[in-house]
Image (cartoon, rainbow, N blue to C red; front, side, top):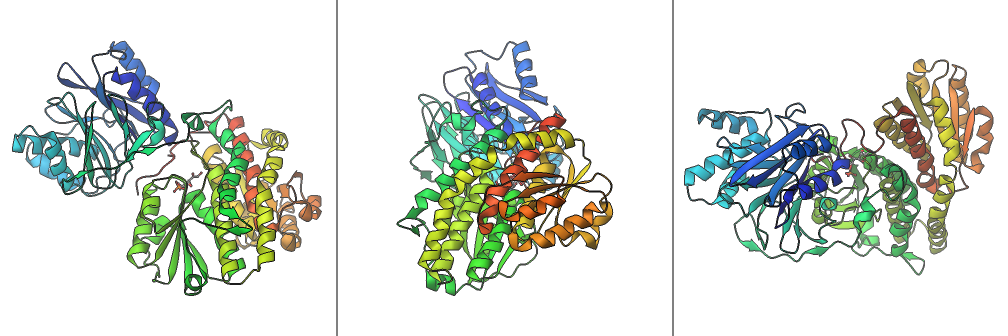
Length: 615
Ligand code: F6R
């Protein structure tokens, strides 16, 4: 999704902006641009395509390393309003060319504002909603004619509906720029005689670790020496900066060819870091969560709300919470939950799952559940993200930064958090006793080793992918938790390899989809649930009879299914209840190698963004 970087200081600004933008590349984008002040003029350069196109343009114009250009804002765009093009790229200029704006988010009332501005005689150069903001700032700036750009931005955002993170540069103010946010992330970075804005911390982490997270409706005025932060009422806000402890290297490839491969190899550590700090004396302790027996017993249901991979983690959560706690759990994708009038009461616990903590659909769904009186428990990876800040309780996953667009280690850690939660609740309400809890915890502690062992089989998967990467369509089938896992496996494959894929419950294929199975169709079957293996064997025979080729992913307890598989990936022995957290890894590796063989960009799949901050 779109990225923003801004800098004011004494160094050449353009290398800082390009460096920041390139660190946001992983979020997905289709064009990039910068605005800066040079000889009291706002200048912009913007290019469709990769950041290197922009860099080339800056080099050709002799601008890149010019020291006297020391204030600017930059943007990577992921098209929403208007196709990817030079014109639609950000920054956008006001009509008089003296104000430049970069924007993340969506201005929902932009057509209405555009009509208002057209009536005033403004002309538009692009199809974007953002250009409206540039003209509107100019309109307010001229209308009051007081030279107060901060006030003009404040008046502008009062007119806006929707979401925005904004950077605004004005030629009359060559030593300051303005930032504002609502429902789209923006942070302030405090440097030595310089200051920064960024939509995401990795963009500026190589320059500063001192970060202030802007809250909704705040505006900041940045100069090289100071940042003044104002709340919605115009009062000055004092907020201590966070000291970011993770390294910018954590957001770099560290010798791996792709972030996705690095992040899969980080799964054992991520699970360990998520589980271990919560275990004390054979019990589970969550710092900010007090779900005691009385609180759990009064719940009428649990709702899990999330998008994409996080929603798939939620489906595993449903299976295990219902199994262990016997409390009804419903899972919704966030974009549906919000608009389908779901039944939520003050007896509902809503579990929100999000890696980024900024997914707009998820954030909006969380607010809706909260509005209806539900307690909110968020399982989030990014500390200080919007969802983490607005939830009643947070369980942080400790996956570290996830850069590849395709989520891998975040999923394992979301599962780890859900398991801990399920065990804790089941224990509190007496569904499992201390001995059973301890046995589960011992197994949880062992999970990182099992994932490690699974990763060591990557060459078998690589070979298999080399034989099958030309497949047109691949099905995943499974039963019980293996069905939940299959959904995630299928998403991972299609999002990066662009191979059509679907996941079905093993028993469901024959109700229609089996018509698509023909000679050579690849069907992948995770089998980790011994009590269901005989049923799966029958389902496999059904598709094999129509010519399917079967890849089985089997625990030793399901080994008897090997006889109906054409190829087998062996998993280590794992408690069936915990199996998805281990069995997902080979399916991620499978997606990875299929994509590498096809020659596609593993980390930055087409049309996708890492953090989806639009509806
Ligand atoms: C798929 C993927 C997406 C995200 C989804 C939610 O690999 O990454 O499906 O899981 O966009 O994102 P978060 O977890 O940041 O809310």
